Length: 416
Figure: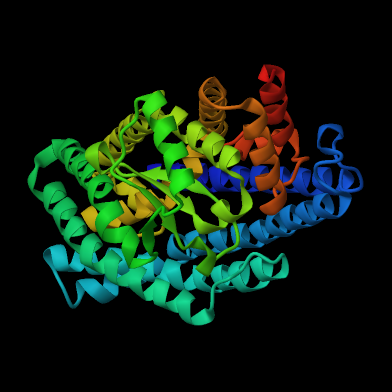
């Protein structure tokens, strides 16, 4: 069997197995959540009523079913671009009109554009049908397309020069090009971490300093107890897009800032806000963000090293339905098919993330009240319609946060 046919068979098998696994996990989630829809878990009885529990179950099932349809579209797109000749056709079109880096950038941006067009109706449905049905959508159609236009302009303004640089390195740096691309990629990501809070995020949302003096004094006291310095505490107008609430840190080094969604501040009392913030501080104290960045960089190094080997192999292109070869084609093909092969690592990454959440919770209860964090989490589960009864296998595979029962159970055990 020719090497190209062998690789084609391997990819087809991996894609089929991945799709079947994802479908099986979705089936488990739908049936498990549906089977537990009629009763609120014991710990949450009296805290979350049956109507809210059933709404969360229906929200979860609806999103999971929608995910199955999205999966089908994702697979069709991959097959259309590879075996269906889509990428070959885009290559033929641009290679007749452009050369060098301009050809490569045009090729990659064209594939990204096609992917975005395919994804657009799914994004619209998720926002204006599913989120609307369950009372979360606050976004207008006008704002949706304004956001889309801003993202496209940013992608072109930032992405095109980055692609030019990457393709130049691939062409000029010899067989070790992947290492130089990796160094460039790491530097670019660190730069984005610095500039995002002050230059990019404000293009989409308004950030105003927290003006509640009593709450600000409480937060300052917590930051002092924890030995944490931030460039500011801000409120983001998340309510103009969604009623979901959240809080997060952004930035790096001296640009770190604390951001609260305005929806979160309306839902939680000061002790709950303090407890949620202490949890986020726990992530920084245990260097979870730094560790995650380091892991991302190591993973990208491994992927680029693999691409360095594959980009010179004719069977890689032929096995995926492309009759030509080259750096831009190699990049496109690799990032189309690599998610299929790295998917089995998903539960490992999810496990690491859940352990980080437990660790941040432990830090939070050392500096605030465990009961305050429990009350805040229960309120957020209720307000965000987070299911209390996910399927254990689905949760093990995908969930970046512990299940509500596991998380609350540990916190309750540490409460006085």
